[in-house]
Length: 225
Ligand code: CA
Image 1 (cartoon, rainbow, N blue to C red):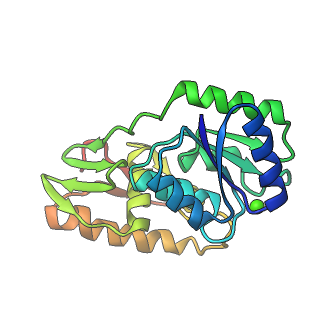
Image 2 (cartoon, rainbow, N blue to C red; image 1 turned 180 degrees about the horizontal axis):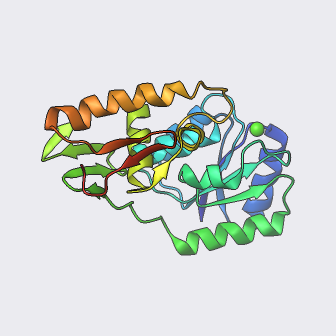
C-alpha cells in the first residue's frame, strides 16, 4: 500500500514512516501542505495521511483543493489533542477518517488498512434544485443549461444551501460552515454573499431560489425558485 504522509513535525513523520515501512507500506513524506497537495495530485496513493496544522496549505485546504482537483484518494486527517478543529469540519472538507494526536501506532495501521479496503470515495452526486445544478466534483454550476461562474466562496455558500433544500438556515450556521471558523467574521458578510449569488443564479433567470426568511435566515427553494 502506498501512503503519502503530510506532517511538518519531522521527527514524528520519520518515526511514523519507519513504523509503516516495517508493516510493509511504501511511504512518501511531505513536510508542508503545498508539497503534500502537489505530490497527492501528481502521484497515485492508496491513502493520504494529512496533519491539520501545516505550513503552507493547512490540512483542510489540502483536502478541499485535492477534491476540487478531482483527486478522491481517501484521506485520514491527524488533529491535535486540544483540537480547535473537530472531526465534523474534517469530514465536511472531504476527509474520510481522522485520528487525534497522540495516536497509537496499531490504531493508525488498522485505520489505514480499513481506508484502503474501502477505496476511493464515490465522486459526489450532482446537487439539483429545479434547473439549478451544482457539481461538487467538477465544481461547476449550471442554471437552465447555462454555466454560471462563481467564486470559491460563492460556490461554497451555494453548495451549503443546496445541501439543505427547503430548510431555514441561520446566518450564524452559514457563517460557521462556509467561512473559516477561526476568523471572527461579521454576520453581514453572509448577506453580502447572498446578494452576489442571487445576482448570478437568480436575477438573470428571473428566479428566486434563495429566499430570505425574516429574522431567521435563508432558505433555498428545492424546486429552484
Ligand atoms: Ca503540524
